[in-house]
View 1 (tube, rainbow, N blue to C red):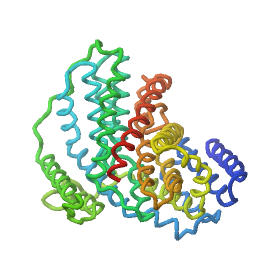
View 2 (cartoon, rainbow, N blue to C red; view 1 turned 45 degrees about the vertical axis):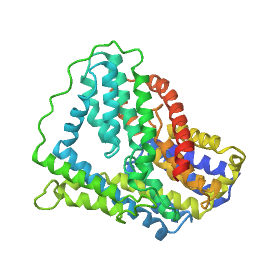
View 3 (cartoon, helix red, strand yellow; view 1 turned 90 degrees about the horizontal axis):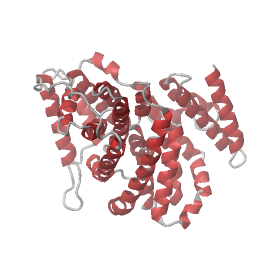
View 4 (cartoon, rainbow, N blue to C red; view 1 turned 30 degrees about the vertical axis):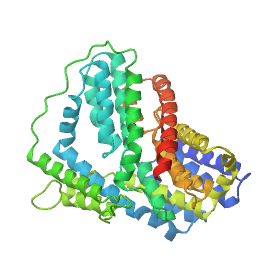
Length: 444
């Protein structure tokens, strides 16, 4: 009850402070959002329970009606996420994730720096298609037993957590903020990047960060001793081969579905339907990779979290709070575009350190969309920068689930994570803003 009381007090303070600058309705919305963010952060109630509260609170305070809130929990983008989770469950059930991890680990030199690069890259690649929480939980035991050296263990665990965050932006399904952006673009009628188009844009960011971050983490431990590599890679089983075939076919379809204007129009298939179809295919007789009981492993609380995020974004739009905040940020119009992108990335990245990146993204997207107006060609660029920067938080345990998970090892001190994370945050801001200005600006 103390945590709930603390959340109520903070929301009341936020609402009262906001009433000095905004209308009563807008101040109430900010108070409710503060309450939700604090409850998400302090775990006073289960994640799924807190994520359903907008259905009750928004109508109760006259923010938006119930019939306008509930559709946000069934947006079409959520079914893309469902399909992705089914594929993830099948990978874990068949053991394919372990097979792929072991094979990737053996590509790199068996040295401290090599193993740090290996763990970061494996974590990043798997987190691009699976939950970064799941990947961190899966790889942490491997990292803990690679060496008895505590200093090296700490660096390896950081590489796993940071790699999971780095790779999450590579695909639209890699991390919740990405899906929130796609859902928001659908809401405002703006064309979103295709699956492979998204990957083409984010790959340079991921590659640059994966070159720099493991190198930083390996400084000072290059000569430390490590144990033997993880267990031998076994031949792929029949189920693993089936799943590899499905994943390969899905990848090919997504590639062929990507239009290359003006030369190739693409297949015109709905990507959300493709991923959901791939997930449902796993249940068919003859494939039998999943049973309905396996669907219990789907993290429905995350789906509710998406619904809450979309609801917050809708409330910011209906109360015109996004426009009101954007007016107070109007000074960015006087800045050159490159500096605007850097400021947006910096503000979002460091704000994410103290709150859920999902909650922050749901708040930030409608605000950032109003900086230049939805009709402006710069707006999609600003939204992409905001979304990617929201996933690049490396300083504090509460910033991302991977950070929190490796803290559970009791080997890492907050000071250690913060000292590495601060500089990596700055590097991430620089890489994202530079890539956005020199590359994304040309393709969006």
